Length: 262
Image (cartoon, rainbow, N blue to C red; front, side, top):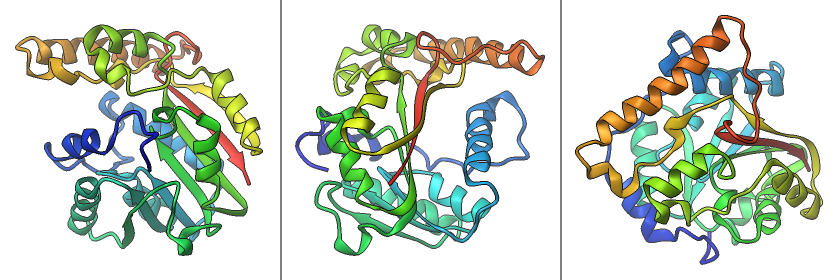
């Protein structure tokens, strides 16, 4: 990734230099603590429709559980790309800890290793595209990794809704490293990138925990604030489990999820 990234390499190096390694997805954990990943698991099962053994690349793979996920549940050959050396080392440590084979590359999305281009059945990114001023250009760069007939899955935070509003209030500097994109904006960017857009929609009814505490993380009230965000979200998820579905929408949904083919 290059200087067009609004966050910048130092931001990501600092972000990945601390904290514990994340726990891999466990489908047996049906608690509300695992709600978001359970919903993503449901999405990928429906999308991939029992496929297995394919090649998958995660762009922006720093400290990510997703190479573990795709290897375990789809027997996929997993690869990762990130331009933060710190983030790549975190990923390698995580994968080694869980015994997962994965080729992690430290490199530039816009100047990728030649052996990775036009290679993958599936390319995924979780929170990458929204950091670049030229959204269509970023999507075009991502699509260069996808082989003919492959899929590009893009997930971004919904910064035009309540998550974005709370982020502005809590730490505006974190908000400002994002481009606030609506579902319509992301869909249009796919069209401008000449991608075959299959779907583009708000994802999940709510997840206030998607808000980054940023500088507020050191405030004595932050633990209480995080518990409050989590409790509100779990109330909505609990209501859904009892059959009162809250449809994903522009205001309360935490993410936007797009699927395109190349």
